[in-house]
Length: 206
Image (cartoon, rainbow, N blue to C red; front, side, top):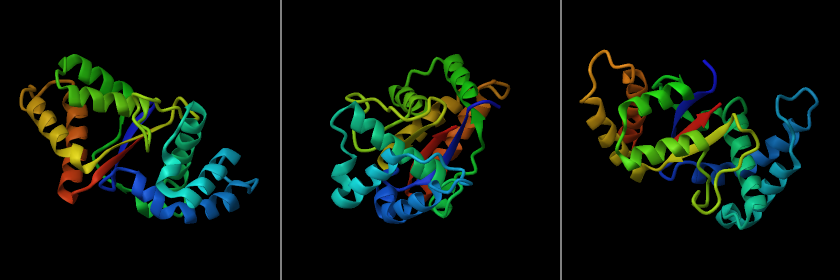
């Protein structure tokens, strides 16, 4: 399948509050597990230092001031979502939307074939494809994680409804045999799940 896109229910703000509420447990787990030679985690002192900063300073520690601090924050979020919440003890923090998993290429080709005009959807797709940083505007300092093939993004609860309405409008215009149906249905199902729960979304590209 190649690099795929997975959708999970998030907090109303996407990722930030989940990270802040669990940073102490993540930090303890990361130090213990990531230094184990048999661990699946690639230990990074940068992640540990970033977790310490968040513990000490709270939300303000997620506000990058330059590309170096931005990369450190993005690595922390990647480790939190991709390790702690994926196969670690935080796996209950993320609930799958059960909307299916499709490759990045499938989404890209589908949206291009539809000539999507919605700036909201195009901006959302760019954030999925490129990653969306926590604590800062990507227009100021873009997402700069540790791995080009692994990216985290999110959509807030406030953004979900407008995105869903835009997708439904596109979906209603598709023919039953459109090759874009699968990708559009996957995205709309994820958004619908978030709407039903009054939640945001966390999106993992891996």
